[in-house]
Length: 226
Image (tube, rainbow, N blue to C red; front, side, top):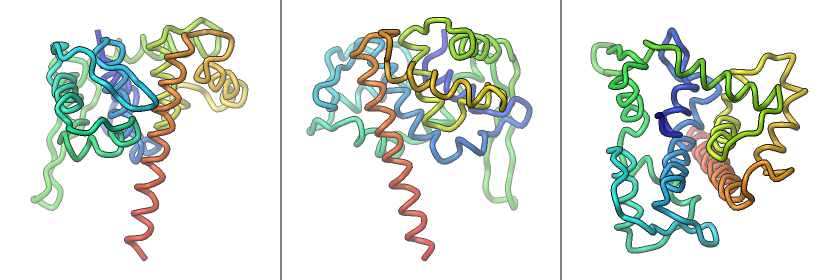
């Protein structure tokens, strides 16, 4: 079974090129940070109080990255809120995106290709090796968005993260986007008691933290270029 972070990355990659969709390039690191937090929440390792994260169970979950994030959240001397962790997790845990991708390579879902830029800078791309997991995810999400299939809490969380990262409409045709935009918002906002109100509130907080981190990074980039 794929983690929420693995699902988000998988749906953010171009199948053949193995690179992140341009629409997600700025937001994805923050989205993946949010996904790891939600993964730990669904594993009942953390809880939220007034947007602050509290570790309630230090037992490892058996995933190297999630266990490192759990230890980081547990070992801090200050209890921080969701916004802090989504903004700073990339600095505290290196290579989150590649580590998630490597996990998908180990599961034979992605392949790994090594490249060099100007014979100095090494980088990787991760084209699809087994397209079935992504196809199944897309089929499930489209059934929720287009055909009104009720989502689980994890599926609603994935939809929310995809929307925050700008990749949701990669699985929706242009003609369907206007029709489904309001529906997706209703699902994420938890209207109609589709999912638990507590989970909806947490997911909205993660979404807001991702948006704030993107805004801050954009502002910093513009300022540094002036």
